[in-house]
Length: 396
Image (cartoon, rainbow, N blue to C red; front, side):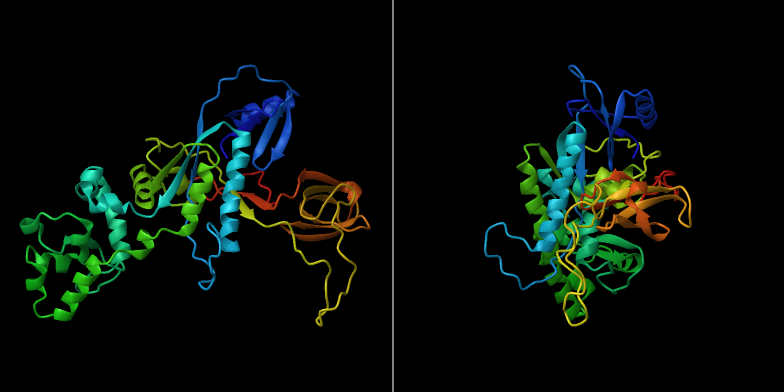
């Protein structure tokens, strides 16, 4: 991350600050570490009438198919557990970030393609068919609809050009239903011919192309149910929600010369994307949902019978399984500093899962808490445009 979140002593979110300034506040004793992931400091004094810059959180939920197609929706708004978990994770982090910094608006990639504007350019201007967005919104739609191949010769992995099925010179029809994809050879060969004249000797292919041109792209017409459910629940938070399409996201990223990555796509969601995004010093925080442990009460043998005592559900010496700890061992075979997730035992002898492997038999008195188990693991990703990882990275 490029900045550090700041709270005043009343836990009121303030503007994020440069990491160097945060270190100075910590050294001077004017602040303390409030949370390590995402890194947040809390001031030891109240900020009187602070001026804060309104921030916007941008969401690219991606796409995910349900695991099972045979579930029945018995209640309005019901979702399979796998999809409900995805929405809950997003809502959790919207709330958490709203508590760390002054979030005043949300941008969400709600649809894959803006079908209404593509079918009727007059709604939002002819730029969707004839201007800069023609290379993104419409082209991405056509690539998916026509299987990323030439409609006439079925050639794949070749440069494809947008082509009018009924010649524009005779119909002036720029609607997306009159567009297809063709390789340069087929497009040049067809020229301004009507498709019925061009494929007079291939009636089966002609009928197939005409039928496919009229058929809507189902995945785009019926957007992933999770995105709509997420949109409705984000609205319930009371913040204004801006919506954008996947084609617009790609257009924003491409015109700004940014590389393809999920977190960069999220930064490019919506019309609110600024003309310039400063990403050179940004290390993304990679967050993975891990859950809160197993519901299994005890370990069992191969026959299903218990082979150990019931697991301890509480804390041992102030620690709980899954907490991120630092163990400083002064001497012995395990001497050194070890950082990782802990597996606690009632005996006070813990195991620590570190990047280097599992370290067993660490006494609780050598352990220092870094981050309590909150159901997620964290890792600092590579800096934008490089493979350089943050020097102080700690996998949780």
